[in-house]
Image (cartoon, rainbow, N blue to C red; front, side):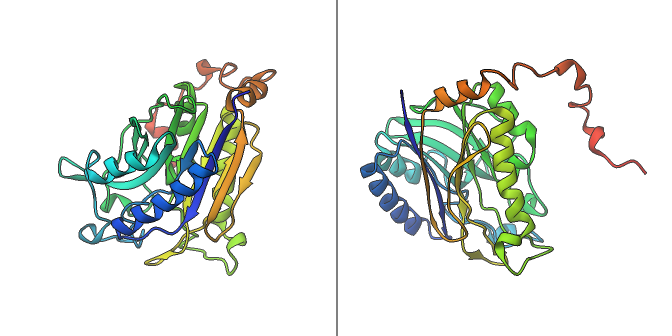
Length: 286
C-alpha cells in the first residue's frame, strides 16, 4: 500500500510576493515535518489576485513573474522531495496569464494557464489554451485554476490523459451579484463544493482543492479547501478561515476500487456526443 499524504491550503496571499514566499516557506517546513507528499496552494499565491471582476484595471493587476525566474527557483529549493502546486501571475512574451506550476526540488513537473475566464477577467489576463496531465512523484496528475472546474470537459480531459489526481487551485470569491449574509448560504460557496465533488466523482479521481481566504478589493474569498476521493466523498475540509485540509490516501488503490464495477471513462459513448465540438451548441436560440 502506497499512501500519499495530501494537503490543500486555504489562506490569504496578497500582492507582496516576498512576503508570500516567506509564508510558503513556513508552510512547507511545517508540512515536510508532517510527512506531506503533495501540497496544493491557492491560485495567485504569488502576487495576489485582481480586486474586482467587474472592470479590472490591467495596469493595476498582480505583479507578473517569469515562469523560470528566481521565485520559481526558490520554490524548487524549498520543495525538496515534496510535490508543490502553486498559482501566480505569469509574464511571457509580453502577455500576462493566470498560471500555476507544479514542481519538486528536482525541477518543474507541469504547468497550466487558466483557460476559462469569468466576467471581466479577460481584461487582466490572457487565456490559456489546453489541459495537459503530467507525471509526478505522487502519480500522474493535472491542474485546474478557478473557473476551469466549472466545466466538466476540463477535468475529463485531464482524466483521459491519465491523471489520477487533480490539483484545483482557486481564488474563488463569494457571489458578487447576490451576496448572502452568511458564507455557508452563499451560492458560490455551494457551487465551489459541488464542482469539487462532481469533478472527482464523475472521473473517479482524487481532487485536491485549495482557495484564497480574506478580502481583496471587492472580492471576499471562500476558503473551503478540501481533499475529495474518487467517489466524491470529502476526506478533509477547511471552512471560511485559513487552514489545511490533510488526507492520507492510497491514490491508485482508491481509483481502482472506484472503477472496479462502474468505470466512467471506459463506459463513455463518444459516438453519441455529437455536439461536443460544436461551439454553437451552447448558444441561446432567439
